[in-house]
Amino acid sequence: MVNTLESLTEPLIRIRLELLYTELLDCHAEYTQLSSEADQYFKTLRDALPDQLQHTVFLYEDAQISLQSILERSIYIQGFKDALQLFSELQNSSI
Image 1 (cartoon, rainbow, N blue to C red):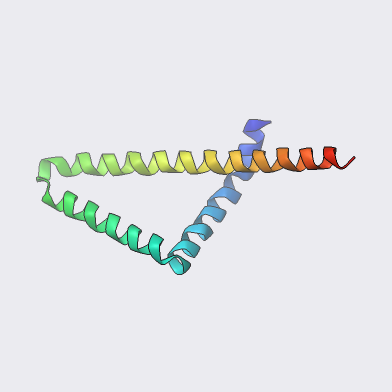
Image 2: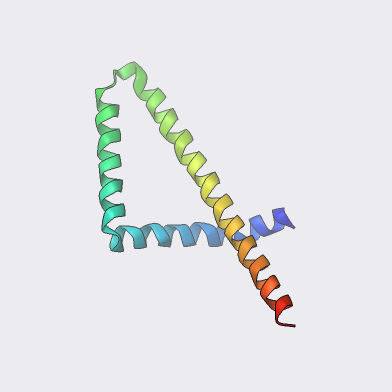
């Protein structure tokens, strides 16, 4: 069931997270500021590195993005499972 749940929710997760990031950028000033600062710090670090390390930085950034994607999906799925469990417990307690 877990694999089925994950495959069924994959498009939903992707869409929902994209909407969440858009909403954060549009409505959450602190998130927008921190995101901008982090991008600038990373650009400064990347620009300061010699050419022979640029590919390593690219690989690092790619790995970080992949890790974040796995973490986001796991958190979303766990939240969904928690909501189902809570719903089930609430249903059972009202009987």
